[in-house]
Length: 239
Image (cartoon, rainbow, N blue to C red; front, side, top):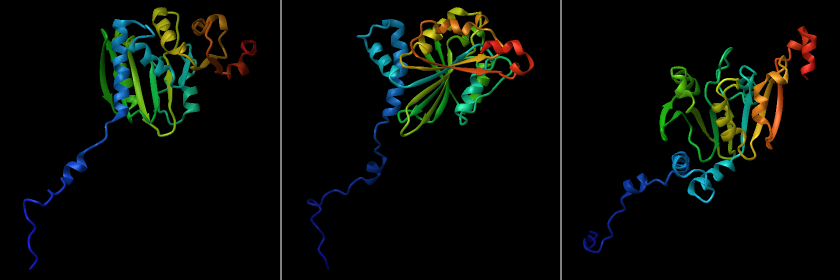
């Protein structure tokens, strides 16, 4: 018979259950939470470049961004669909995009969709199963709530880091709101702007041009509704 080892000298067995349950920190969630904290800080500290808020904003500005911009019903969402068919977004005949929709792609993001509202500097987040569900919630909001609401869709991707933004269609009303969108999205450093323009509209009647005045970012003009040229020859002058 083999003798039993001395109970006092035997090493304790490893706690395999604890070892299995131990997980690495989720750094993606940390960065996403920092972004939310940044929105809160800006309400109190302003945009001082030496502040924590300024540093976090600089990090955000370094992420390549594509912005779809244009007048109401100019075909922004259709253009986005053409370029990125995977993005399932409702295309409406009247007012389609009622608030900014941000598609965040990269290794730091998790696969989720949410509706965010900034209520007095406090970020309220509602998790949604899809962009369509978030848009249905947006349709129930009062107009005053739309101005502080956005839809965020995050997609985890190992090798691509990118933010794609579909903005509400520009109109003459609510110039203060579109001025905010201009400051936050259109003037974001190094953003690429896809400016959709209806072939049947004269430039002087398209207010979306006003918010691009003096913009130093790359602007790609996409002419939509070109079928009007076939039925109304003078409209060809828009080109």
